[in-house]
Image (cartoon, rainbow, N blue to C red; front, side, top):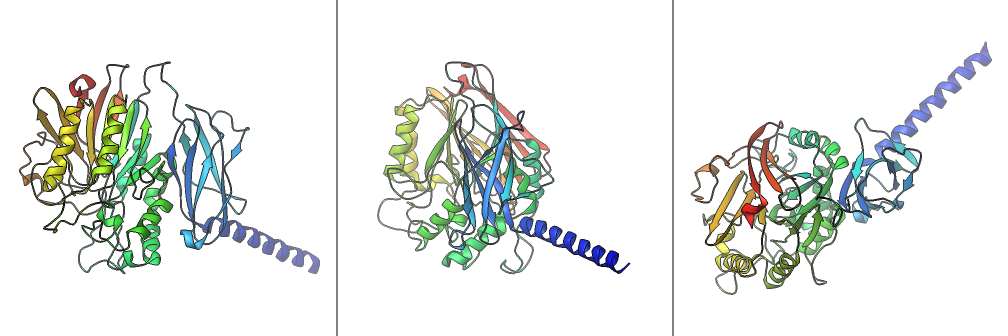
Length: 446
């Protein structure tokens, strides 16, 4: 009997140790995994742990679970925010893959799927693949210890669950993807803490794990409110942006900043940096600029070279809105006019602006003599507080019925045969209810 009792307690201790060990491995995970850029030969994935740990991902074609591949193994480090970038580089084009996360060689189990897609090589073979993507800006996650007193500024976090249910191919983060609080931007500790607090939102995790994510920044994830090129700690926030996002590249011509581009089906996306080179709003002398000449020339060069049906210029702050107040490009009129003139003189077709920041959503359509109208789809806020008087602004380019004052996300769906593609522009509320939609055929934008 005594031997039975000893065996029983030994077995209980063994189970307890095993369960605690398994839980400990799961407990290492801070946030993610997140799918970053996806191409036809490579996909980047990202993960963050709570302490230093070895992480890797196994993946396989969804229909071939017995043939698995592994990413590189990375040991996360404190000086890099315990983040890791993992490369799936044994992929084939046009496939759906399932994947598993391992921390310290222990598989982490989740109660939602983990899948990523590679892009299809369609050129000279088929019509462009139909795609759908979502977008939004201004993601404020409450933090009672550091927030200002009063009514919480953030809410409606279920918007990320609705984005996950929409199942986009990718999500475009249009800036203010987090909000540095007073003092966060002074130290790497503060910067990492704010990124970690935002990225760890439970409602966000399924979405991050199942669609590609591309990002630009705006003032609140660059530095203080309305921060510009003079921000003293911009190199540190730039380093953090590179650690916590997985864009294809950062900066142009070997320079600093976050400018980059990517393609998906027959669409090109030009992700611009409206902060690193921006002159201060209050400067009385010197050139007033947001992008600067080098970035503008890079943009126009690539727009001219692009063969994409639709060419999306992605940046924080509205571009077309003529109301000269708040974060709108018309306050930097000379540079704005320069860009508009170059688009017209170079006869660039299919240009659409995707913008954020403004804490309301609307579609602007600017008519032009002898050519197609330019569009600017502004999408904001995801989960910050809306700007209640937005629909009263005298934006005479606003498409009737598209102003929405409330938390929301935007979406676009591109479909049709080559040469006859249609883009559908949609706004959804936080629960995934459709607010409005409008469609344009490519021939209307040429």
